[in-house]
Length: 65
Ligand SMILES: [Zn+2]
Image 1 (tube, rainbow, N blue to C red):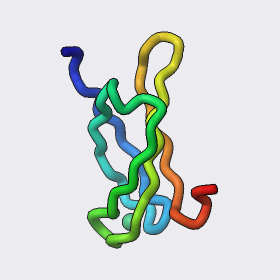
Image 2 (image 1 turned 90 degrees about the horizontal axis):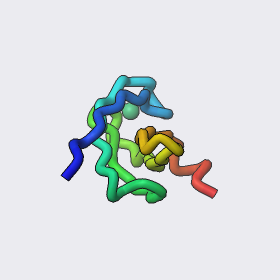
Image 3 (image 1 turned 120 degrees about the vertical axis):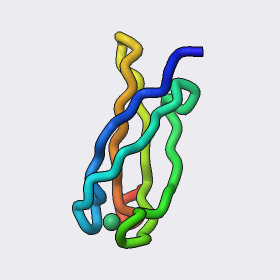
């Protein structure tokens, strides 16, 4: 197993910096997790680039579509 990638993102609601662990198996997937600070649901989308590096983007729930 390759290791998990740690990324830091900021909450789209309150701007708090959050550390997230990215699993290679999550590439291309989205999931929702509540902010640890403001408790609002954040949509995380995991991306994998051509080099196999994982990154994540966050959106607030209202922009999900
Ligand atoms: Zn927040």
